[in-house]
View 1 (cartoon, rainbow, N blue to C red):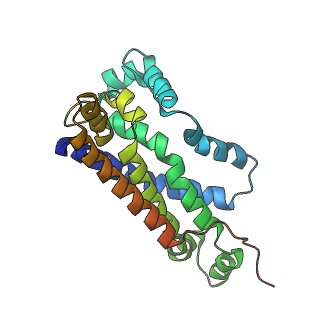
View 2 (cartoon, rainbow, N blue to C red; view 1 turned 120 degrees about the vertical axis):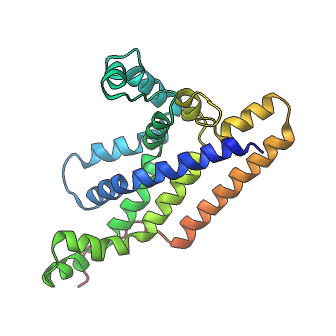
Amino acid sequence: MDWEAGRSSFALAVVTAIVLIPFGILLARWLAFTQHRSKVIIEALTMLPLLLPPTVIDFYMLSVFGRGSPIGAWLDQVMGVQLVFTFEGFVFASMLINIPFMVQPLQRAFAAIPEDVREAAWVCGLSHWQTWWRVELPLAWPGLLAGIALTIAHTLGEFGVVLMVGGSIAGETKTLSIAIYDRVQSFDNAAAALMAVTLVAFSIVAIAVVLTTGAPSGRSREPSP
């Protein structure tokens, strides 16, 4: 078992989930309730990481944020930030890949909140902010929990994004998925099997969380007669 790679994997998964939570809540709520014409386009962009190979996203990230690009050079020289072969860039790429895993369960949870519940909160004198904090968010917590579980599980198993952007730096960007690949290449099947079982176990736990929370699937928000 590569404990160093395990720590890197869990650190990446936890940080990715934490950073995505506020963004996922805001985007998911907007997608659930908006009638704006751009909704279809935003939803399509949100789902894009599910269809594109991670290497495609990584290629564009390397092209845009690499030190040889104007943006990458500016970030390095002016801001002192590098988004390639660093843990910070590791997290940024992981966030892009995991957006749909955080947003979609939350969007379904917000969409399942009946419109008359929100209207009742407004009639009772709650502001839109108070309604969101005291009514909508508590009702949408199963979607949030499911999004966190899926994001962590998917991050732990990600391979393409960590290899191209992270660079497999031991103690920083080398994760369990890369460690499994390396152990198989060196014919250490016992260690690879142990790490693979660990990832399978976490995936099963994530699926169990999604199923037991019963995240809503978007029933109608029309008021009851």
